[in-house]
Length: 340
Image 1 (spheres, rainbow, N blue to C red):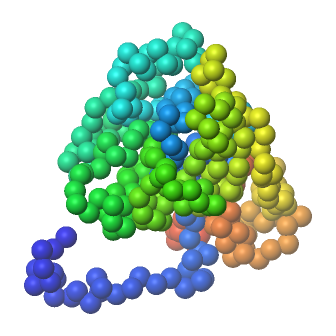
Image 2: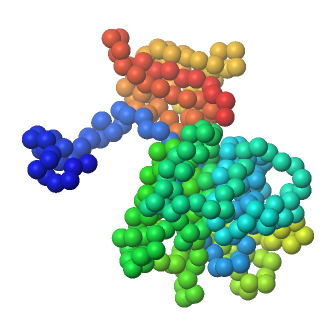
Image 3: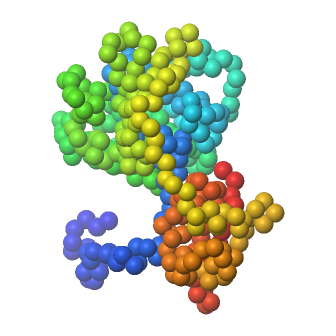
């Protein structure tokens, strides 16, 4: 913000001071949850999608984009419909046309967009993406295929700092707009027992990202692949996929990792019963909320903290938005049934 310390305000101590929260203050705040793009599979944030050349990454990117833009569930994963932008920077439009028509036939949608040329990240790409999102506010997914096409060439391009910086810039954009940026990248030739160690470049790429997908085959000509995923907002998974060569789509054959499901929450269950299609909104104080929840034995401040902590689960699992504000009467709670 300032070129040097001399240009900073005199009261720079306040700027330099650590903004620390107590545990009480932390619990008294409700934070915006990471929204799923594909439940239990892909969330808002910046993710790497990594695989060897010609392993089938571009087919999988087209498959993801089509399912999200059409609102069609992917295998047994629920999809939340939205606009998709696919930066297919190693392709041409004629090849995209041929590939996707072979995969999905002639059914079309008007919210799946393609780009074959863009600026790089240090010279205008962010502004281009900002413009697209402004014109398409329902954007859920932007695919960048590949990372190498949008990064600035330079002598330090393989340094940890450079790798961390480029993903951090992308993550800032995805966090700002609450969308998913899926960045296609390559594996390195050196084998490793940990699939995520095979990501080409330094650990700075994975360190800055919200998660990663690694697709591998034993042989390039195999129809079967293993897809491993790990992230901050979803459980680690290992999926066995088959490639349908007639339709050029990936088919889930087996999930080697059984997803853990959180147990039902009696407080959230009780709150969900307060709202209905005929009465989709409730507002009042925490004490008034407890009056309509006679089966819940909690103090008013505890029910507020419970809702602050579980606001994301309440929204994603129950379809109920939660707001807490303060006025002259104290803290006011608002609960509302929301559409997707």
